[in-house]
Amino acid sequence: MSTHDTLRNWVRGHLGRLIGIPPESIALDRKLSDYGLDSVDAVLMAGELEDQFGIEIDPASFIQYHTFDAMITSLEKALETPSSNHAAPPTAI
Image 1: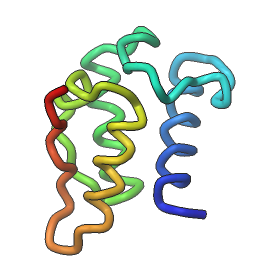
Image 2: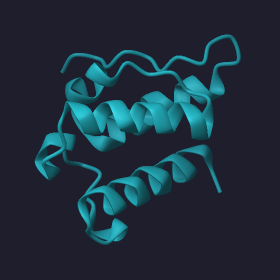
Image 3: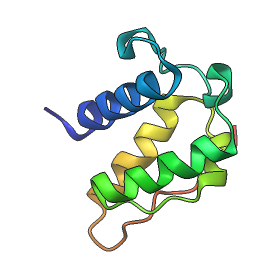
Image 4: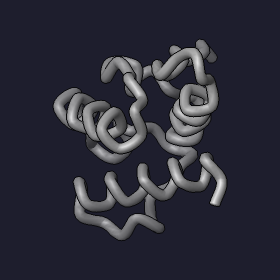
């Protein structure tokens, strides 16, 4: 399984448990806010990403990602960069 697939599955599973819907029903081309997630959810998710994958991410950056896929791509880059364990800041669209 690729890093992207691993992160995608983790994000879907985490969000599915958090909001009580099947993970496969989560559309990764939507924003976190589309599912009613707030800043508390972002802080919890950032902490769990750090625990699970060793990625440090500013919870505030979650609201700046255009889509879940954009967030996952940024996290993937952070995992593949050996000199840093910080997720790249989102790119303005």
